[in-house]
Length: 386
Image (tube, rainbow, N blue to C red; front, side, top):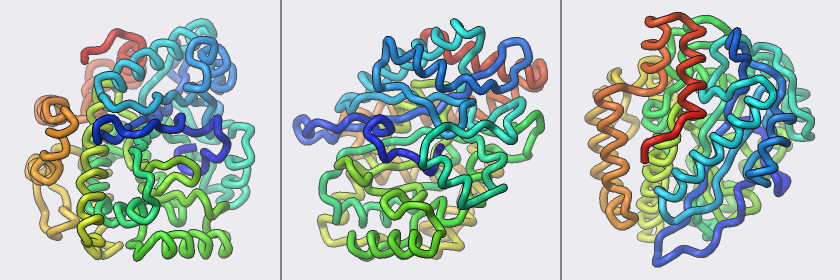
């Protein structure tokens, strides 16, 4: 599940090595749907396909919250070009395993065709989520991009979340890839995010005073049965409970692994910039939670080309202006890590073509929902640009 997993070692990205020359490692997880090539409908073959793909990928592939999905992940990387290569290899290995079962792999953040009442995977975390949230989970069928950045200091990691909060809606917006669900156009660019925000304590994290405050808050939520487990709150930013990383979880899975690698570069630069501010004594801006959720809502509805709510200034600004502000904020970190060109190229692609939501709707205009699925599945198995 996008939001109730990752306590056993098989559910986590590999433990990161130490930084190379001051560059923190970054790793990603992508969740992908399995579909029937004839109908485009999602198929509950995740455990079987994951087992086949594991012959090549080992523990870099696993099942997911529903049996309609598989998860691929990268080892920790200092170079995002290497990370991109790992993603391409993982997607192609899963696509080959799925093809052996007569299926295809679809990188959409919600099922384009079918998806409600999905079979839930056999994992204690998944069962606990279904027991707690009941029918809220009936159509909780979503696929995400998660990014892990090395940040061993738990105190710093807890406060970094305060600095990331204003930028989370923009991360939603730049990866929006779920306009369709169960055969209908939702009218949103990221229906996955809308689905997630229904669940208590899921979405942007609260303002945190310290790591002790973080642990106290999560323990209170678990004691009140708002979340099943105190060690894994569902927030879009959280220190990982076992690994020395901070995890950012707000993004839809993109259609193209090049975009996943670019988003990983942006997130790493955001985390590094925020950590330096925390180490300099800045605990982060105290944003209104309602204002932040409002910014999320604009991002889910209108997508990249829309005017959205900037959570820092409370002003309505077009996406390119908010992207420029982000690049100004993290530019020095991108430059240090060698990712400035990768991030700039990503924003150029967004300006020219929009997000995955725009791509899906363009495919729909050309040939309906089956064409949307066919376009996404062809993209997943094909060679990809760097």
